[in-house]
Image (cartoon, rainbow, N blue to C red; front, side, top):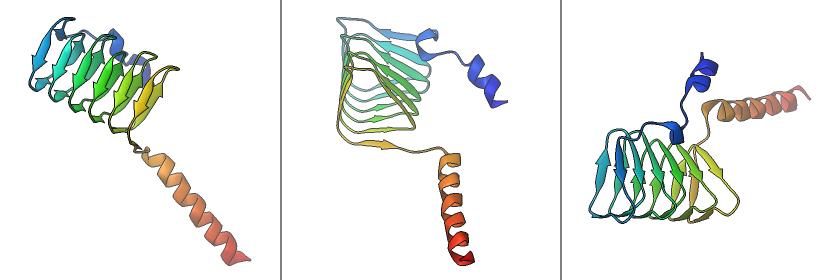
Length: 140
């Protein structure tokens, strides 16, 4: 079933954008939105988007970001907490990142701490390997 859900999943940059902060717009304050947002302007405050965020090339966020999926073409000066993050070639992030999935194109930059939580099967398999080594040692 997981295979079908991945094939049918619409990529973030193909989603219908419900909110657009256009180039030249400046928002002083926090932004909270329920769906998909594209920012081309500047946000001075924290950004909390339920579904996904696309940050355009000339866009700037001075604050922390929390969302499920994010594509960064512009700049973020703050911490990011997401499930999936793509830093494009023009993307610049200064701050700490917490994510499960990370993709960085050549030219994309990140200055800060990176914390990636692995999926359960990866942790489970390494635990099994440790147990197998203990069993082998006991058998010898």
